[in-house]
Structure formats: structure tokens, C-alpha cells
Length: 484
Length: 151
Image (cartoon, rainbow over the protein chains, first blue to last red):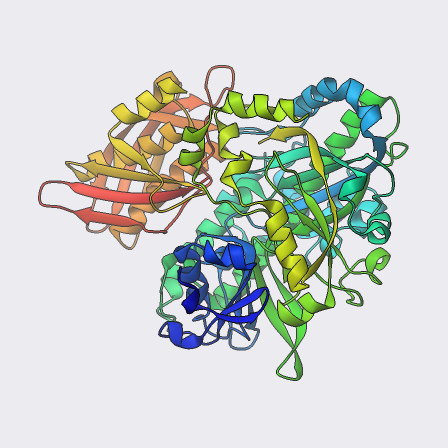
């Protein structure tokens, strides 16, 4: 991609003007370092400029520094649409609705974990189902699953899979109020009902990591997020709504395909099908999407419950006594109604984040009370070799990127090429030499998730820090990984 | 793994990463529409596991109609993905009792097995069939299709 395509707005913001492509209603902006912008994939530019053509889009179509090719929107795409004359698009949310990250803190240190590493890994692998065809330990009847999708974490609280502290530290307290199970097909229910409490596969994982003192960048905020001791053990969970969310996306792409002509919507890319926010179809998709989002929050909570049981067994203490608490849980594939000041007027818009994390700064009501004076935690998943990162939301993000930031490192190499580059066993050995033990159901799949298949997480994190849309707080070095 | 690669090279479809990095593409051709549909569905199975290791322990009937042939094809592959999650079922053989272009509709039987990690090597999980770069073309001699599958 030629740099002439872009106008440099600042050190970290690059803009493509609306005259780049017929039909663009607003500019496209890429948040990126100079080095990353030089390597940007042309497909990403094509996709983000397609997004800029969607009706009712406000200000810019945005792409985060970890952006890479997706379906419809690029992964890392963010766009806000008018509630009155804008659209809702499954391609702006992703098939895996409310794929997201949960971060747990513990009172444990690496020294306490070391002697029990292998036992812990084996028990986590046995307890948390992963891979194709896996079923969760919670057997739900249809009416219970409707409760899960409509009430989210409140269902977990009622059934002793969560404590109040968890709900106080999850985006929307783990429950989107727009959920209505009558908007969900029986097919979606059948796909999802047995999968609650499972990791899934692909790039989904459960990671046990250490917060080394040299990787704490902002000690005050780290302390506020519960990262408060040397070589502290933290746990991160990356997964979403499993087959349930995928079926809802599949169902509504078909519905939107059927109604596009009726609403006079040009179809530039069939993965970018949309419907007016106010239409019956758009409203029903939003309700179904909220159901999938709630199911994903429940999924991560059930995994958290399983993790607490395993730690409790192995360390011989209650999970509460081990200090296993939710730091935060963020959705990175979602659409939400949020308020922003646009063109001098406060207005509500439907913000689509597809492979992008909400990054609200201090003061916003949506940020949990515990963090409202500093901003919300932004949890970023890296590759299984490089580990994850913790950042903090900012008011710059509220102003510049509809309160959004990055979500991960960003894939650069195809799965097939990654598998050809190195054998899974060799990746496992290399990880072991770096002190990381990994377990998976299919060893060649490890190579697909190796560090070389992704952008450098430090580079993308530095890019959002430089842009001011999130502040660096800590980096976590992986110790154990259950790969889905 | 080498066996798995060998299997894929001898199958009547090609796995591709031409259009996608995070996921996988499938390129299929068939002398007839039935062959195209059957081979594409087998390709979906083969990305997830070795079809030769699946037994015919169960039969599932599929009946579909769509407004056009493209949607019928995508809907057909989506059925394979659906039964994988809803019934933990993967098929190794299918038989069509009906496959029409006008109007687009099909009736088929899938013969296959319940997923069992002790008997099957599970290589990947296909979660959705996408419209991305999708092609379905009737050539002079054959039918061709390209489809990207979300992993």
C-alpha cells in the first residue's frame, strides 16, 4: 500500500479521504505507527473504505493498529451509525458475537505456581472443555438457556457460578438489556445449548501468566486493577459465544440479504450486508445479538468458575482465599448504543466494534464504579508465545475513536503458511525453553498460533499508547496455555 | 499430520489460503451439481477430521430450499457445520434424492458418526460458511465453486 493513499493527521493517525472510492460518506482513519502503516494489507484498506460507504455512518470509519482482513469490516474495524438513519451490520460485529477477554487476578506468585505447573495445566485441560465437538459441564434445558441469553450474568449469580464482585467488574455487568430470545432461531439454540463453558478452538485460549515487575508500566493504575505484587499470577480467558453466535450471524446475513433491495441498500460486499437500525429486521438482529453477547459473558463466567475450582483443588484453598477475582471482562465483537458529542451535539449512535475493545476513559457512567475515576481496563490478547497486555481507557478514545482501542496482536500469516513454517511439536519445545507449557487437542494447530503468525504485540500496544486512545499498564508473560 | 495432508491432496477439492489469513478456502469442481455439492460437503468434513476414520453409525436427513442456487449451496454447507455443533455429528457420505436448480432445492441423507476424540483426530473447527469471495460457476464441462470457511 502506497503511503500516498494516506494523509498523515498525527504521528499515529492516517486518513484516507472520501474521494478515494465512489460512495464514501466519511473519511477512513487508520490508527497506526509509521512502520505498521507501511505494511498494511490492501484488503484492509478496501474493507475499511467500504465501511465508510455505509448509510448513516458518523465522522470516520476507523481501523485499529492490529487491523487485518476480516469479513465485511476488517478485524480491528470500528464505526458508529446514527440510530435514526444508520444501519446495523453483522459484518461489523463478527460471527463470534461478544468474543472477548476476561482477566482474573490472583494472590499467587510465580514461585508458588512453579512446583505445580504441570499438574495445574493438566487439570485445567481436563476441566475446561476445548476443541471440536466439546460440551460444557453445565447441562441446560431450553428454558434455562433462554434465561442465560436474556439475563446473562444474573443467571450465573442465581446459580452460584458467579459472585457479586464478578458482576461489578464486567462490561454491562455481563447483561445486555436488549436481549430477546424470540429473535433467536431454534437452530442457534440447538448449536449453543451444549457449548456453555467451553473454550472453542482456533485462537481461543486459557492462559496463566506472570506480571513481572519490569513489565509494569503504570504502577498506580496496575494496583487499582489488582495487579499489586511482584511476579503475580494472572489468568486470561479468550473466547466468545461459540456456535450460538455464529448461527445468529449466519441466520441474519440471510435475512439481511433478503431485505437489502427493499431498503434500497447497495450491496458492495455480501459480508457487509446491513439493515436500517430502525427496521424490523435490524431491531430483531440487535435483540438476537444481545442474546449471543449475554451467552458469551456466561460462557467466560462458567470457564472462570471451572478455573477457580481447579486452583482451589491444587492449592488447597478456597478460590476467594487465593484472591482469584475478575479484573474485567471486555467484549471485542459487538455493537452498542452509546452517546458521543458529534458536530457539537450529543447524540446516541450504534457503535460497531469488530476486533476492537471499548476503551472508555474516566468519568463515563458505563465504567464500573471501582474504575470510574481512572478509566476502564482494556485487555489485549497476544499470541500464546508473547502473552497479553493490560491497558487503561482514556478520554482521547472517547473523543477520537468512539471510545475504542485495539483487541489483540493482529494476524499477519495465514494458518496454512504458519503450519508449513514450523511443526507444532517444535513450537511446543520452543515455548518450553521460554518457560511456557502448552496443552492442546491437536498439536499441528499450535503452529497456527505461534508468535511469528502475528504482529509484534508491543508494537501495536505502543501504537495505541502513542495515539493516546489507551494507556499502557502492564504486560503479562505466559506460563501455561490451554489452546482451544 | 503428513497423513492428513496426503488425504487432502487426494481429495476432490483443494484447500486454499489465497483469500484469507485467519481462515481457510475450499476450491471444488464437479462434473455434475450433485458431485459439486457432495465434494464440497466432504471438503468441510475433511478440514475438520479424516473422513475415512468416520463410521456410518447414523443417518441424518436434510431438506433445503433457497431463492437461488448460490444460497442453496451455502445453506447446504452450513447444515454440515450446524450438525457438527448441534449433534456432534460429522458425515462421510451423502446421497441426494433431489437436487434441483429451478426452483433451487435439495433432499439428501448424510451418513456419519458422532465425534469421538478417542477415535477421531480433530484438526480444526469450522464455525461458519462465509459469502467472502464466494463463487459458483457453471462451466462448459463442469461446475466450479470457491468458498471461504470461518475457523
